[in-house]
Length: 134
Image (cartoon, rainbow, N blue to C red; front, side):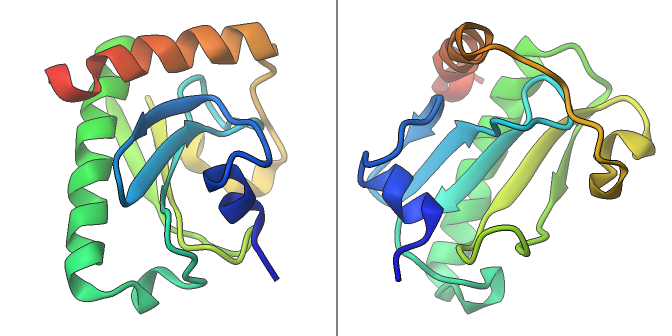
């Protein structure tokens, strides 16, 4: 069965794309913990991050690094935190979250930042414009 993220990769479900290449896709989380919360995924469907082939694993994190720098250039924050949880969708993914304190990365609080589709679209465009410029 195809994962939600695989459907996004194929264009069956829309997303607010930040960056993309032949192997990876970065898009804004629709239920962000913070403004700029971005998901980075391999286009190839793999359930666990530790099952990603070694070369792809390294390339995925280098791609995420470029995206994180772009997020930091656009969203005021002390750092961009990285988390790999992988329980919500059976498709390897990295969370990049702008943070000012450690609690900003707490997934268990149920707290999400409300953003409209137009706000997400505008933010995705701003971050995307910075991805290869940082």
